[in-house]
Image 1 (tube, rainbow, N blue to C red):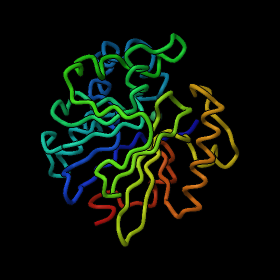
Image 2: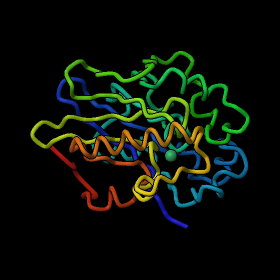
Image 3: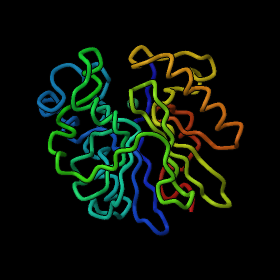
Image 4: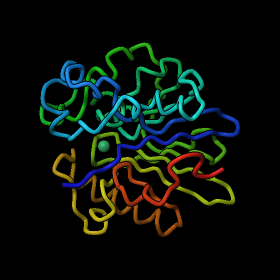
Length: 235
Ligand SMILES: [Zn+2]
């Protein structure tokens, strides 16, 4: 048994406003009864989400950082699983950046992949402004935020590389790999959609490391342990 974080990155972009990478888990999951209605019976206990509290939801955490949900201009999703898309409904006026096939797959998953997605996360999102990508994208055409397609865990998984200027580049890679140890040992995850694709993505992650991009995996506790727990990571 390991305890892992389910992380959201808050990016204060100099010219494009407040950008989020991933959305974490929806606040309904903090309450056992509401969780059962929202996720259906089972997943809360299966994923060990009893540790998740109302204060962990991204709307509450943004408030703690002095931001309002309405300040968010873009949300970028690694993928639409229930621990990454949970806060989608908090940001109806943002641009939602997701791979085209991930969005399709979330709305109509295969029977054997459906349990990773929570329909309630996006059931009200038909009218949202989705920027549907079909590959890599230099989001603002200035090299600051580059989306890279990293499929395998899901059909349309993606990560982002942020250029922080003189502080170098970091890669927010979602569930492209779940743990550093898995990446180093070439071990996939039981719930991966396509192991062949995931292994090819592992190669991409290693290439990022060789290019001096510091990689953060959403669920690797070690990647976040050394960071400060309040305030800015970088400015
Ligand atoms: Zn995940």
